[in-house]
Image (cartoon, rainbow, N blue to C red; front, side, top):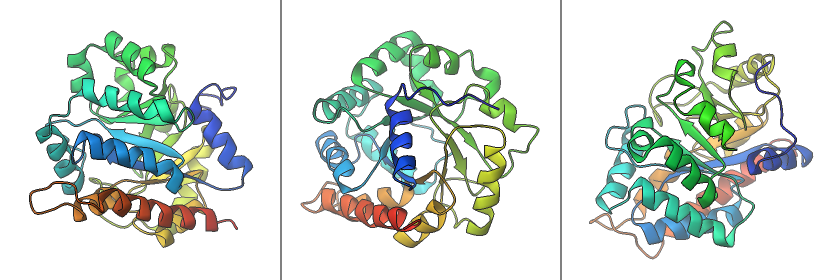
Length: 282
């Protein structure tokens, strides 16, 4: 049945338990760390929980983000241009954590920067910074010994992605060491590429839940309160990334620098999405 629900031992477990008790889905938001600069990125992250974000996914900038669409690739390049590194990403999480001891933080990205950093050192530093979980998109279950199992032993949740092409034969392998929640990617292809068929989301969530007790969060293609509500009616969580990254980009000046409305451009959309999520089962 996949990894069992833990006894609310991580912030992620506790947050999903809380939203479930409130009778609603969780809003999971993604932004690239350091986009467009470290100070603005930190200000946005600090403001997002108050705007309605339940779980924060933070992208680890990487030079070759093969699973990301143009918007998130561009965000990563802006962050790298601004000097963002994995070490600085952990530092930014630590700064965020000083003022917010409760909101779950998940680092999302690719294995190469972690491998270069050193897996053991990374897990120690991530825990110390206040990271709760990892999503590493290019490590399949067959590579669990590389990072997944060490991360679980270190007390971090390891969140796995399932897609429409993950059939019932493949699901048990995908779910074997997954914890925190399952991230269902509701369309095939790169991020931000298309609109999902909401009528299929309910069936997909039900199918995954036959294999696991974990919450199922659904993402890709969520751009508005309406689309967030459509998914929240069937899933335990709604994941939004590209729309937030686009809102941030739209607030930048012609040189790609933050403007006076950058933080509000993101938090305004978060608040709109949160209202959609909360209306779904009202």
